[in-house]
Amino acid sequence: MTESTTAERTTAENTAAEATTTSDRLVVGEVTVSRVVESVGSIGMTPGQFFPGTDPSAWNGHEGELRPYFLEDDGATTMESTSRVAMQTWIIRSAGRTILLDAAVGNDKDRPDVPSWSHLQTAYLDDLAAAGVTPADVDVVVNTHLHADHVGWNTRLVDGSWVPTFPNAEYLMPEEDLAFWDPEHDNETVMGPGAHGVWADSIAPVLATGQVTAWSGSHRIDDALTLEAAPGHTPGASILRLVSGGDEVLFVGDSLHSPAQVVDVHTSSCFDEDPAQAHRTRDRIFTEAADRGLLLLPAHFGGHGGFRVAKDEDGFRIVGWAGLTAI
Image (cartoon, rainbow, N blue to C red; front, side, top):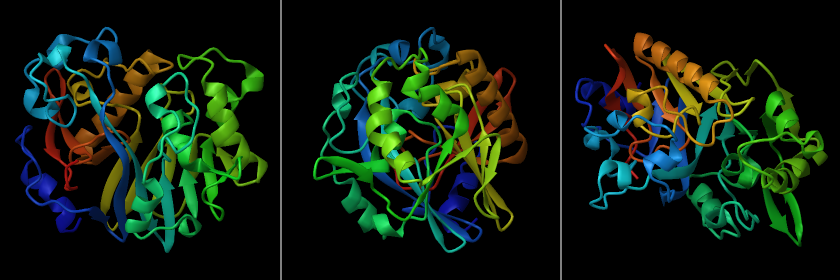
């Protein structure tokens, strides 16, 4: 990797260290990666609320990893603070194409179950333009799964109708999630009935235009990028593997939301449909990442955006942060 990612290895045995060189993008072989942040801040939930049944030992004593980017720096005790998350998109330029990974919350969406996401008016499209991308430039949109905060910008409101934000893009969606969230199937979910509104305004409109490609198991986007099933958070949850120029990165979606889940892989969020499966998925990802020194980039990590792990006698530990400018 080039200078923007070399910094992670220089911090390899310092779990509290920040990357010594930061950049607005990562360069992985012939592929560039940058992020567009829709919002970052408190999710309004303490660790015990966000991660029911969590072991306090995964949080207490890990202040250096958790504050200020993953817990509010509010003077409260670790377990009484509120968790911080980023709503963001990864922009991947590969093989002459622009791939947009996860589409955040979106503007104008009615989200009664999550009032802080309702009827937003953010500068996301302006920020996308500042990163050198217009909606017409996007060739592929990847929804790692079909939660509201990953599909919102699939569409935008034009003259009272929801239309695809990215008119020239192929939208890749996991087949299992399409089946699970389809209102006609009336599945019970931890997200409640509000998920039906997400389907109506952010999924159905791109299905109607024929822009959706459903996939299952794995899906090769190009020679550098492959989607792989990683269920647990949702039935169709996925990760994206980037391999180029001898380097490798894993975009791990919502497999985890906090560094505390590295310390204790059993810590599952309240939004995981199958916590036991989510635990197995995290363990599998961390084991490979530790064995092979892979950089992991979760969907909702603020701070430097990602990390590396090593095996510990009780599980895993963070041994370095990614080289992106901290948010």
